[in-house]
Image 1 (cartoon, rainbow, N blue to C red):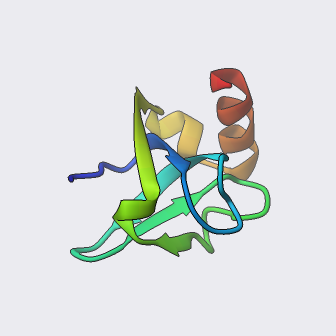
Image 2 (image 1 turned 90 degrees about the horizontal axis):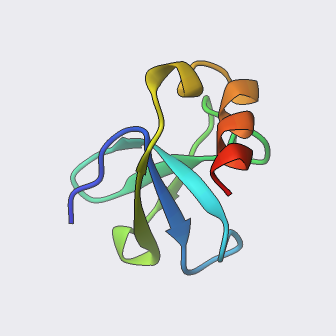
Image 3 (image 1 turned 135 degrees about the vertical axis):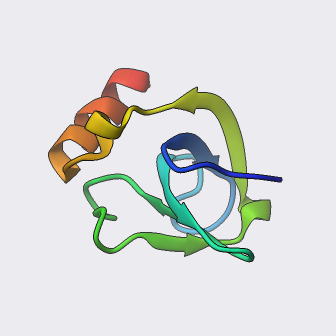
Length: 78
């Protein structure tokens, strides 16, 4: 499963279970997610892609420019 930067996902396992998060980056094996609060853009959480569900929604680069903008965008999408 391919994940793109800015894509919104829901965590299905771990401490973040049930939370809406944004994909910050991905390498071949792991996906790095953030929410702008507990997980800021400069310190994303590394997750196994099996523990994420795609929502089909994407954020614009402007929504991912700062942690504050990211938090507002995630609240708007809920």
